[in-house]
Image (tube, rainbow, N blue to C red; front, side, top):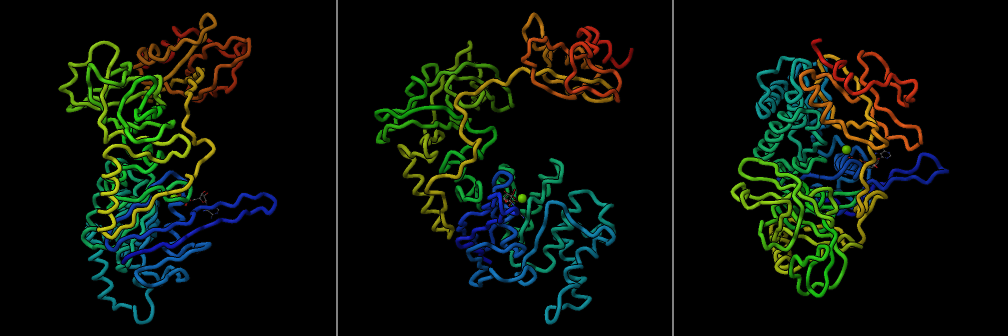
Length: 505
Ligand code: ADP
Ligand code: MG
């Protein structure tokens, strides 16, 4: 069943007449979800994913626009009459019913000509349970199942009525990492075997990349780009999409185009013939670097992470907009790194440039041709390429931070108690008027004790009064004052700290 959203807008009006705080949760959405595919709505929290899903389900009514299932206009249809199956983040099973009764429930509510015989209902229930591989547990109560199993029951319950469209709202968020992977494979398998058009909401880019046929990337109620996972990764239409997809994330630099050359700082890193002079953001995927002694981009090495087949060079550059530059290269090349300075050449198709004003992509070289080829292919497959043409929606704190202000040193209040893993990461003390980091020291000293926990962090006071290191409080229940004044705090030198936090003494 194809699902079409036509100029869908959802505005939540202000509650208070005096304050104009209406929310445009979904803003003029135009989208076609092809029949039999799994499509992810992906975007940060609050971008309107759930609202979109609820409008498709009929639980919420659009402020304007139309929704079609196939050729049928379902905009005014109630949820029961749309033929949808819905699965939420919290499995929402009936705790007093068995798995079987839970799955059976939607069928018992069917009325009139849709009503099934008891035998048919039981058959359908067993079928749905088998599909999600939960048929062994039909007689258990939800509380006797793991989270992953409960979510599978919820999916079976959504499937039992044989919906035309399956809608899933962050169905995996409550599961632990391993189960999340497993259940996501399961959903993929079920979708493939039933071919039910499925709309899957998530904020997790990796989840979306791995599960979907198509991704719809959203921000502030606006579609930023649609496409196959690999396409949107390889060909982001704007800075937001480039930043949102990929782990490790894309490296961003401040740069400019001048006379057909791309500059990062004073280094000419690429030829971009034909591109107008402008200030740009330069995005380079971690896999877009080539180690080369005569390379055009210079960075300062700060560490190397060995990841088996590949290594990740962690370096810095004054033109980088992220604290570090991460480049992934083959482990075989590790021998070519010597000294503090590392030079790279860039793979042209892994470098994206964005106009600094509009944050829209500026294509260069072979990129435009491959972009057009991708759109043609998409249209041939019956999918419409959507991206935001005009100004992009921006949040107040959204601008790329050009000047990264280092975090002020923090005073860390710690408390020690039994049986807690050592969580100490950052610890400072005032020494000769300077804030000195003592974290490593404390962490190492207490490794065996495993009993330090950061309770509270507060910025170092800027007043003249010296801020003393606050020693760990030995007792678990002892309250830690948020603004412990030096005189009233039982400040002990770090040496004592060691003793108070040792387990066996
Ligand atoms: P997401 O699912 O992407 O996290 P939502 O669709 O839940 O986002 O919300 C989109 C925006 O609409 C948010 O700003 C949210 O605060 C607002 N919103 C959602 N539901 C309501 C509601 N019932 N009343 C008012 N505002 C709402
Ligand atoms: Mg949501």
